[in-house]
Image 1 (cartoon, rainbow, N blue to C red):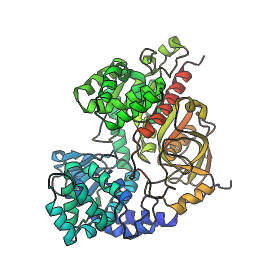
Image 2 (spheres, rainbow, N blue to C red):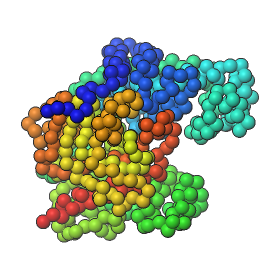
Image 3 (tube, one colour):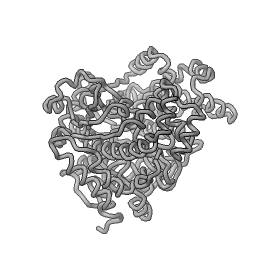
Image 4 (tube, rainbow, N blue to C red):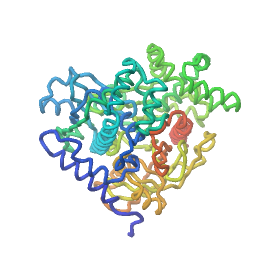
Length: 571
């Protein structure tokens, strides 16, 4: 059958990937500078100024937010491995004594030895395709900043600045004049760095950056072993559920939206949460509340604000987290986290425990008695990165009685919409397998539109699963855009590769047009737009999705939960 899309993708991107995979075969660490030329030649849409002398603050900020705070002033070596035994076998026996560190915008388990080494746990090769370009972009932009800030004038300015605080407005103006970096970009950087701002600027001015990386093991067996142990943790925690005898709805979303919709906890705290917002604990939340008052917002939008506020409310008092966990446990929702294998939380809830007393009012139960007799289980996972999606769904499928439905919600870049819009594809081209998957998406615009005020729902879309966020460029995207592909993301393809193996008697093929419409269970995929890569230089490094995505997140989750309830209430 004639293909509708190019077979492989951009040659420069493929060359870039081959370059760093060949270097990672080395038994010793290699400098990230070895791939900077290939990185710049790829003309990444997220790194538009890589080849220019001008600092690409959007790319620098994007990378910075996906690396732990300790990285800037301390880390010079990044070591990758799939599990603790892999690190121990390669001479890092004391890793248990290292400090666990996190990044603001990327969920990846990492440990810092307090000196110069960062140990990173990788769940699949997609972690490599994500991490290497992040480190390379960081190296390139750090070098530019170092050159600009290492002049005598800048060193003198930073020496005079408050070493325990931020640069003043007048000092920032001097920095703007000298570096040609926009004031709002420097202010955003200082907001992230807080009281470490001057110290970080001074470190960049005085210290060259040289990042090296080492891959300890990258065998597919080690990835599968880590995934198996992750599942064992779920099975052990929920030992009362005999998964091999139960039908399962698999959901890939996040750790908060489904729980908020079924537990009723945030809504039970409405007065406290609104007072928390009114008291000005968050300027952003206060502004949203004021807008909702002026617009006489619907109850649904009000509830979305409660859900969004809950995380900040809990951050102000850790005891409030225990209250939420108790409320979730009271309706039978279990949270399981086994980060020693995969830093990927799972939630398990039996469908029979769903009831209208706790459910969000936008959900309806056609037959409560029938639902109460359901044997089905919902397994919701915090959406993984790339090929980890294939490994996880494959592992779960081997250990349950029956798949009743597969529902995927995730972030994507849009080539024809705005941040906060929702895209519903029925065609997915997967760059991992080079397959183009055709499937019947359970969702249409009508399932989500009633729950959206500002965003637009675009159904009957065509999506492309890319190997990494940096691994795309305008030439590459333009080809697909001309073919009608408008939805760029990282998980749908691997998930659909696993769907193929659930309905066919062999491993998924490669470089084929694959018809999945014969699946005897519903498949629902929804993506909410977090990036507009055709807006040059504007991505999640230049702005935060924040509340822009909360409405589309909950509209999508409502659609998923309603689909599960309706399926279980069928006569």
